[in-house]
Image 1 (cartoon, one colour):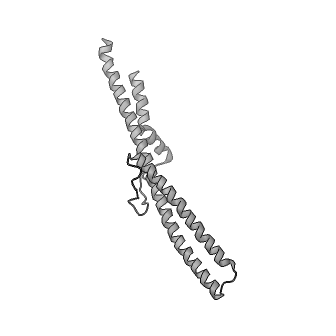
Image 2 (spheres, rainbow, N blue to C red):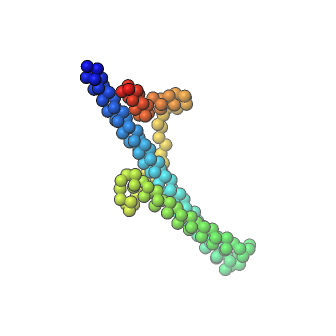
Image 3 (tube, rainbow, N blue to C red):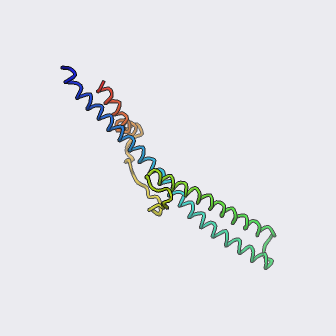
Length: 162
């Protein structure tokens, strides 16, 4: 008689635990995807900054070359310094492109897309989003987080099933 009464309750608790395990996995995947997307956005921003700096250093390099031809430079090293800066910015651009491609491939993998798909951020800039109102204390936020985590519900369901 006790099995007839309690086994359906135990089964419901196991189903509840399995549902919460699935929710926890979904939350973790969404966090990974959001972090990968923000990484991709950051790298695209760094590439834009690099392109702007490279353009400016190339202008400086051309001006240094013209100054050297006209004999206006203070030292002969001005052209070499400008050329070095241009080369450093070009190398930085190559590294950033590689990091961007790696971040795009990571995001594509998380989204179960073909890794050769070219992913670019939709937003031009990161826009701040208020997820939590500022009037909550850290202790209140921690308590809310602990109560809302699916892992806690899984533990509760396991205790209830036992």
